[in-house]
Image (cartoon, rainbow, N blue to C red; front, side, top):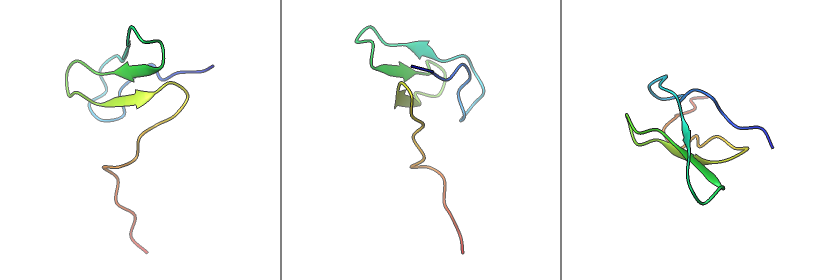
Length: 46
């Protein structure tokens, strides 16, 4: 399964968690499941 290389929040390199299911950024504490991207901080205006 594909995973992110760069944090979408701060552009640091993401690390794989030892559980094998999540990725995290040690700089800004962003995390996401492998193969997905968390969008909770993005607001969409219509």
